[in-house]
Length: 84
Length: 227
Image 1: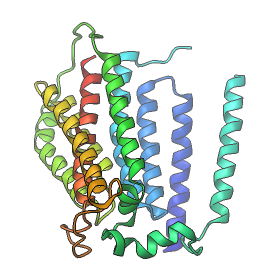
Image 2 (image 1 turned 180 degrees about the vertical axis):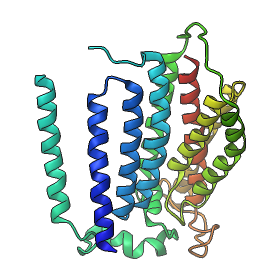
Image 3 (image 1 turned 30 degrees about the vertical axis):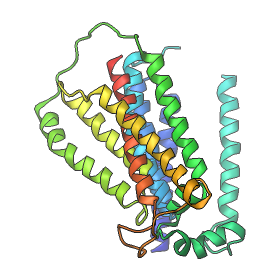
Image 4 (image 1 turned 120 degrees about the horizontal axis):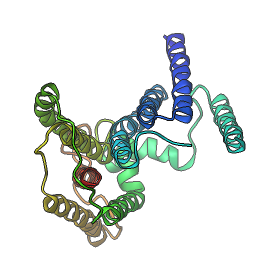
């Protein structure tokens, strides 16, 4: 059971690193916003594994839900593509 | 380019610090607790009656911090409203929401509100509390904003709820000052732990915070939507 959780965490960590690189390198802000929602979701799973359900529920609601919405509205104002 | 390299080095350093912290603490929860943490874990349920110890720390032992957080949130919402007021762009062509989105959100919205209320009413028993509950409610409203064309909650009602809840929170704190000589003291009867009507003023505070955060976040989203 313990090693199963460890493998799951390792796999999710890989996804987390890839999603962070996508946020960093992407010129398309819509892709970056959705990748940041994925980062928050994985972080909330990590909080659950670390036995902090209070933090996990807050991270899932704020990081994956509300922040994505606010950033989407901000993207509507700022424009979708980042220019150099 | 240099900026990216510096950022990468900083991120690597930060990650190294976090990793070393986790590595030294790894089997979590096995170290003996000391000082105030031990007091919270051993005496928390007897003193405040909440089975979710995190809740009793957030609302009672560290109640001033929560009042500060609520104030910060209020200032942020007010500042955003001030910044975006009178900044209306010309009407653009908005894409029509599809029938699936419209129908789904119409039936999902009451369930989301119910779930949010469940989280703040059961804040002293199960994980959660006023802040996540308010955000869940605001997310439900966000869902309605993007999927329903004619959905517009009254701005007056939102700010009235927010101000009323904020005032009630301070009044609850002052009640503790008047009856037990300490701000935000747990003056209500504690009841039997692990039941809904227990833990004194914690459920009252969390219901107030849930309403306040929910209306505030909905207000922020509505301001952002109208620009």
